[in-house]
Length: 410
Image (cartoon, rainbow, N blue to C red; front, side):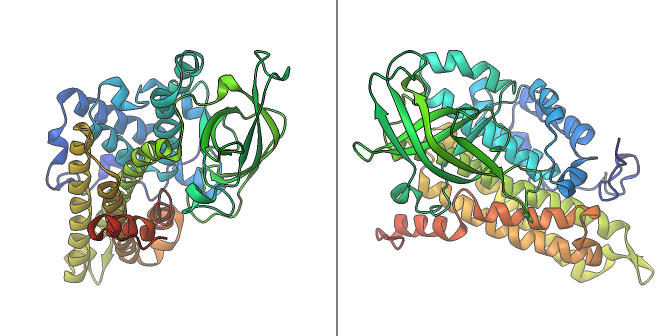
């Protein structure tokens, strides 16, 4: 059993326990009692099962598969499908991120993309066959959209192809199959997942189709992306499809165009914006504790005016970001959150996050560049959040198009 990380606060001796939390405006009070109790249960799990070991997993670029049964036991898969509010679902992602961004990313990819896709677009047969195991983490899923040469422009530039072959005996049901060829990149959970939701262009009509692909099928090649400086625990993969035969029964019945994909991406973009909130909460937690406990010139860092100014700026950024996301959650609850509003939330919160984690890293001085004290990990993991689910620039241009009526993207 690895030793507790020196950057993790010891609750028994925490000098800041009596001080206000980073939820300075008390947004959690908007949750129901049931949700507040569940959030506390999640926090206790994270403190016991994730926090003491997260830095070691990150340093070694190892995914802790052994925690999945315990994570599943929390029964937090796709919270909105279990009767929880969208605000609670967002705070779940923020809280997991607050402790470890990589585990939050795994959770988001599996539950908010793969499992939610089954709920939203799977046929009754697909749900019956796959949903229970996926929701309870007996199987794991990935979302294979981004390609080696296409990220922001994947909607129009997708090169992975699907060709329908009729009457093939290669299908499990003796019917039609689809033959997939192409490549995907940056696929979270891609090295170990059991299934992946693969997006490909239909050779017959150019439409975007979705397929539930068994990752063990012949022709599926997977390799881990090495040498990452962020989200090192996340197992991102390069995936190659060479004449992979997928039964018609595993085509996602509810997907008919890229607009359907956008429904999923809007939800995942919201969750990544919640990750930007969680990163700021983490940075504030670590920086404030360091400032209160670290002695320089015979007094705590917290007694220096410039340190207080930075901490207050970090807090303001976190509170403003959380406030924006609370409103997004309310709009989701009403079925009114549109892509431009979500894009503004993602771009704004990620920009504030970048500023916040940089201040936190500065407050820790030299200790801010080693993972032992958590802040270095928070700092570099933020760079991944800044980029994925729509880069800052692309999300900004989505909002610009909405407010001017003119597209500057293409």
